Each structure stands twice: as C-alpha cells, then as structure tokens.
Image (cartoon, rainbow, N blue to C red; front, side, top):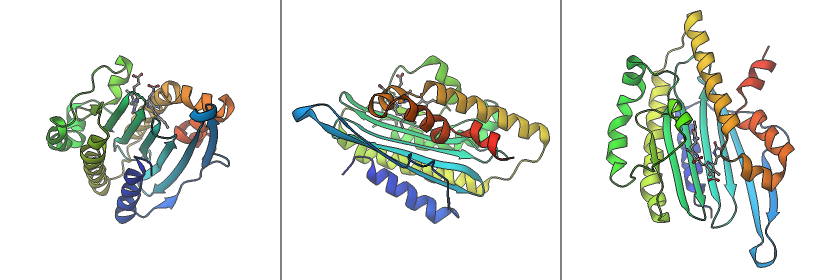
Amino acid sequence: MSLYQPFLETALALLKECLPLEPYPIPEGFDRKEATIGKGKREETVLTTSYGFQSPKLRQIRAAHVQGGNSLQVLNFVIFPQLNYELPFFGADLVTLPGGHLIALDMQPLFHNAAYQEKYSNPILPIFESYRQFLPWGGDFPEEAKPFFSPAFLWTRPQETAVVQTYVYKAFKDYLQAYLDFVAAAEPVTKPQALDAIQAAQLRYIRYRAEKDPARGMFTRFYGEEWTEEYIHGFLFDLERYLQYRQ
Ligand code: DBV
C-alpha cells in the first residue's frame, strides 16, 4: 500500500465527520491516469488518482495521489475556501522521491497583517512547536514562495520512512483538525472591499501555484503536456476557470 494512503483516508474521514460534503466535479479523464515508465526490470506503473469535494464554506477540497512504486509517492492535498471567507488555504505537499521525503504542511495565509496572523497562525504555533524537534526545518526553499507561507509552516525533509508514518502523519492530522476548527468558527465576509481583497489574494496564490507547480515536469514526462496543463488549470488550481464559468 502507498505510504500516503492512510493520510488520504484519515483526511477524508475527518472531513466527512466535520462537514456536509458534496462531490466537486473532476473533469472527465482526470480522476484516474496511468502510465508505464522505465524498461525491463525497471518498469513501473505510475498511477495518479484525484479526489474532489466541496462544502458550504469550502469551494474546493482536492487531493492528487501519485503512486509510482517505492521511489515515487505523492499526496498533494489543498483546501480552497469559498471567496466570501477570509480563511487560509490548507496546504499539504507530501512527496517521496528516490532521495528521501519532502514534507510541506501549512495554513497558507491570504494576508500578512498582525490581526490575520493572530487569528490564523498563532493558534497553530503550539502544534508546530511540538513537532519541531522531530521534524526539523527542511532548509532552502524558493524565495518567491515565502509570501505564501505562514509562521507555522512545517517544512521538513525526513530520511526515514518511519518518521513520515509517525510524526508527519500525526502532524498532518493535527493541522487538518485545527483547520476544521477554523472553518467551524468562520463567518462570511460581506463588505465589497473585503471580498475584493480575498479574491485578489486567492488569485495571486492560485496563479503562483499553477505557474510554479513543482510536479509539472514529472506529470509532463508521464502523461504528456496536454494532459498535464489541463490537469493543472482545470482541476488542481482551477480558480480562474471557476470564475470564468460560474456566471
Ligand atoms: N506539488 C504540487 C502538486 C504536486 C506537487 C499539485 C500533485 O503543488 C508535488 C503533485 N512537490 C511535488 C513534487 C515535488 C515537490 C516539491 C513532485 C518535487 C519536485 C522535484 O524535486 O522534482 C511545497 N513542494 C516541493 C518543493 C516545495 C513544495 C517548496 C520543493 C521545490 C523546489 O525546491 O523547487 N507547496 C509547495 C509549494 C507551495 C506549496 C512550492 C507554494 C505555495 O504550497
């Protein structure tokens, strides 16, 4: 079984327990995609499966699960709130490559002011601190990505799979539970100016992630450019399409 299957199952169970979930449409041909890579003894199948849900306060809850054998496992799980909530994004990028694991977990902020940080980062800091000794800072990451992370950004590169199965798994659950607490408490925003600011911040984030998706190269090699671009813009980071078509 894949390393990240228990993460996915736990997340979906927790979401179902806390929220009235409806399916979120996945474009045809993107819910499941398979490719065979390598030759002879090194032949591997890479399977990518997609999951999408929505709830009254959350526009899109989506996961991409890549299973490519022992040296390639990914769970990218992101929650995009409705545009009338100032909730942060829940972002998890759990990546296993031949060189080891790369773990990014955060409540990604819409805004960087003291009040926002007080509301959406400070409550997470005790959780963040409790894992720091087991999940040390992962070092360099792209400078231009910094504005999209919070002070509670858990970024770590464990060598051992056992660390992923224990501490990372627990941290993932704790962050998601804390996020669901934020969702439960969130009140809709109604002021036009505040709504404009939310939409602008969500667009900034989605454009950055679609443009810089670190999985683009991998997906293009496996499934081709056309499939990959459509997957990125039509499902993984689809806010622009959503705004175009919702009228
Ligand atoms: N990352 C995604 C999606 C993925 C995915 C949709 C479905 O956003 C996988 C798959 N992330 C993925 C893979 C790699 C990374 C790396 C396969 C490894 C790429 C490689 O080494 O070839 C956090 N993810 C990363 C890195 C970071 C993140 C910082 C290292 C990239 C680098 O060093 O260049 N999560 C990622 C990120 C944001 C985020 C950049 C920005 C807001 O939320």
